[in-house]
Image (cartoon, rainbow, N blue to C red; front, top):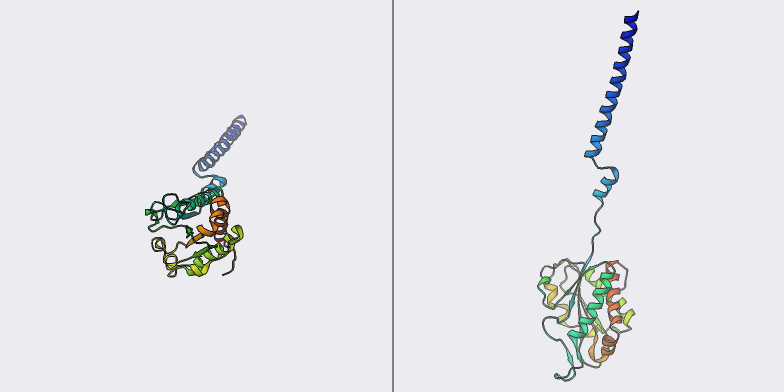
Length: 233
């Protein structure tokens, strides 16, 4: 009888030890898997994409090449196109970067234009010294993406006019604008346009004394395009 009781006690002890060992093995196995595999939160973190910053390219007209239009005597010019445009381009850059965009401000014949891949390329210029008023924008006539380029120009025609109060001067769009050299250099999938911000002769006061208005017009035009707003032709 005593022997039977002893055997049963030993069996219980072995059973308890077995249960403890089994529980320990299960725990260690589970812990090891957790060490090797990321938690659900970690897995979500790994597959969450990094936000993409959009790149906008601006050409500061005539920069690094020549002065552009000069108003007044050559020895004492009152307005120099390249200088007027550079100030406005800088204001546009600041506004776009504040909005979280990456911005390239390029010179007229910048090497980075070759095969440029961007959300858009906009070349900024100012018109001649004649006593006229108005702005004009054009896209390449041989565009590979004419619908997209037309929408960019439509945004400019709408937003730039609204911010500056300047009228459209489309009848003076030239061959040099529609076949602008930079259009041929960037990737054909990059939307492009050239904008004459106003006439130095008739709009010089606005462009120099209130450059923030012109810059606001350019900035809102770009936002209009990037946000896919519906605009007229």
